[in-house]
Image 1 (cartoon, rainbow, N blue to C red):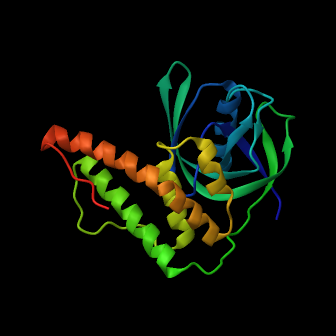
Image 2 (cartoon, rainbow, N blue to C red; image 1 turned 180 degrees about the vertical axis):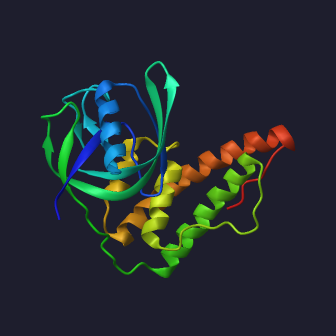
Length: 219
């Protein structure tokens, strides 16, 4: 089914389930925000493929993005609004429209291609991502005996992409968002776990050294 969608091109990859704060200051995006809130509709966040900046009217986005549901919008002064959003579902751009102040598109909402996921792969990725989460607990100064991660392979891969959003450049995360085949998506998520673990470990080392004097990395 083809549907219209307002677009917000960014230099960020948004994954389903990922929280994304956006500061809006341009009049055209104030308009987009007002329309979405009035209609209770999400907008589409999509990574810029080419273009000089986020506000570039000629910016060309990637084909796959994620809808962003507005949770709250608060003025922060100077004509700026801080918008809290959450990623909902993937969309694919079929055609772009540039006849308004902001980009719109005709999109479709693809579904995951469910293929057999080897149990060993799922267990390996789950264990590694739990390690990331434990390191992040150390950073936050909290402890939970059971580290919960998504059980569904597709959601697990998206959670890893979300965790990597502040560690890896968007160009390395877009292929993960693009992948509809669940097994292939999990394999790609597995490939980004090593730098993610390394970054989380370094953060944990700094945090713990300030409190207790260090933390050992465990493989």
